[in-house]
Length: 217
Image (cartoon, rainbow, N blue to C red; front, side, top):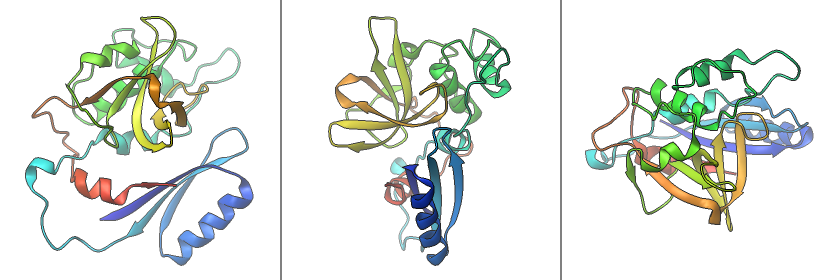
């Protein structure tokens, strides 16, 4: 079991200090260039296993989060070429392998969900996720969040990471043309979705442990 911390928008000097502290605490880390001069660091620290097992009904981690974190840093290619990874995101939807200039936030979510072993919406439309799976009243780390953006059918979709006052942070695609963690007004949320009942990823593990471990700095 590992404790995970995600640090975003770090300047080079701040990133160096964070890395130094991670090493002192015997942690491991992945440093990702955000493309804007700043960095995202995903740190993992060893922690003891809990003494008691968590009830099975609460033991569902969203397997797509590991996949989504592994995609951090993917971004559109400037010029006539396309990022082949983003083309792959589109290929999991009914659009097929489209260029990275085609809006791809929903394609990214669909890619991550389907790679985790669960059927997505197969749609490149963000609002297609509004009826997917089942609703949740609260924002659960890892849940799929749909945001309003202009008039329907426009929208945005990503994975909930955490809150900061009246704003939320989403790990998503096509956020400033890249996969990153970005901040949005919480009042834009129009749907919060969990997997369909019984749809558990083949790589799923304990959600409660992940929730206890995940701290967003």
